[in-house]
Image (tube, rainbow, N blue to C red; front, top):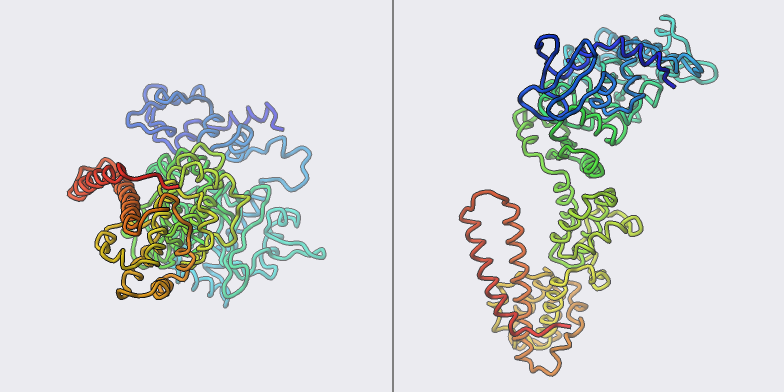
Length: 606
């Protein structure tokens, strides 16, 4: 527990002007200082700091407080953690650390880590032998020369007890080295935690060394080895290069989140200094909160172009309702990581990619839907399950209704059904849901999942199948209407393929021959052609049935095309109407007129 005495010691040791001045440009007005508020967007300074009282206030957004309140707001910390943050900044050891301590003091761990960083850096820059040479070759191959290595304090860990011996000679105890995760103890002896690896030091928000990431040279495993959780390092709370990126995040309003150390370094060296990376763990809500204290506009998830990078983008969906920032996504082409893309295409191309970042959910929807043929009802149902899985992390969010409505429109189902699938997703988990499925893999699910389709889709698929069943037994009666059928927008691409295969048979072909032709383009054709019957058709002659079913399919086709046009116009937003938009409006008007004509003499299908 933090005592009142310690809290006051920390307060007295903290210069409010220096603290605020880390991220806000302050100008003196009399005895006080003014600047633009770091907590909301403004052009005219309304943020006021009084060094005499140690208090601050923004007359724009109303936020105010002391140094602890400022750190809590800026760093997204709870009150006790804000005190600890400022204590660390001032080099003050709190009573809670001195009393009842079970391990080495925090400041000793920090000193050991700083000494390790210095040793690793010296080994990389000046070390001799195959190991340091390999480290320099690897980093040079990534475009990191000696100046970059020195700036980022990159290093090389030789292992074999070299670091332990160096730090023990500096007076650090075995307990301190183990607690800092610089050494491992086995059989009463210490050995280096990292060996034969290029080392990337990890710093806290104040730039102090708190951990390392080590990249193996050669084919060893694991490829990356990171410091485990220690009293001074928590993976889910820290970000690589956050100490360097904070000012740029505040200036640009944006943060770029990458997957790897080298990606971040390459971006910074190219001038994109608002980049950070998660540390041996997935991007977390604590990371989002930390970034939100500086970037005020958006977080750009810049992930590798491989499957792992795409999955990382999907995992970020769970944070959509955890921040006021916009979450957008960039996935690079050709399976490249950001460092590779920068080397090949240059920083201007990277800036263009970042400027074109898409809303995270749009990317997730597109990636998931790419595995399915949405013209096939059964595949739309499978796609619904896939999107439901992606949205499952938001099932308790106020955003759920909006996304459910969006996918309902995309997939031709009801909002209620889409939401039900999302809420039930843990019980309906599909194995390998992300894997693309062959065109006919879900054919057998169509009837079982028919209820998931919207009323319009059920109407159209039913009419299409009944028309096909009629064509199978009386193809010559339908052939004269081929030109009209060519204008239909089919609900099921298989139905369209079957229809044209049957129409392509010569006049007089037997029903068996027509079915065989259909099966040649759609293995599922026999089951489709043997589907149920529409009750209202009973008692009609063949010509009447043909006329009725053509009207029914055309009616549903017109409705489908109208919805597609509306979707395109909505996507265009408030942009001025061009020739394409005017053409779409005219087409929609014509379709609505035709829908009215067909609906007046259309009996209900049951």
